[in-house]
Length: 172
Image 1 (cartoon, rainbow, N blue to C red):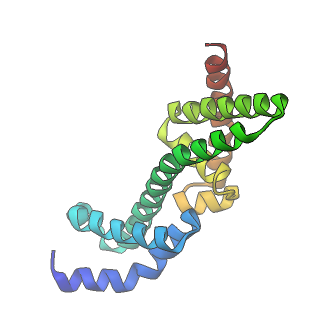
Image 2: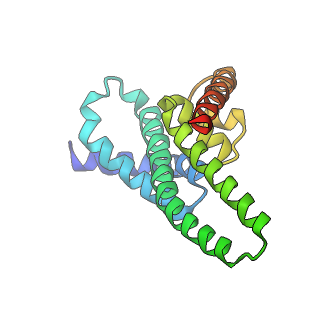
């Protein structure tokens, strides 16, 4: 790929991609990382784009998915540290009932986390955007470039599947 062409793409779409990534990550550094990773991925796959008019949309999708991946990675690394902090805090509690409730909540959260990762990718993505990021259906639709009604349907189905999986995990 021509270096001038890449520089032009970078200049033209950086702010748009940054905005897409920031809406997902809600963190300046993570959004910038997502944009940079987007361009790295784009360099490798630019020849796959047949219609040059769609490059902006193509880059936006890559940016959104990359930002979601970064959030997942951050979540996984934070889960271990949060569990460690939670266990330390629990050990300091003297009230037996509080400790018991904390353990139950922790087990439920672990089961919920496992259950979410058993869902298909498009259900995971929509659920994580809704639950972790607190985005509205329209915002999710805009980020993923799908219809708002599709988001609502997927959220409903994901929640139904999640209930089944969590119930199965709790009885196991």
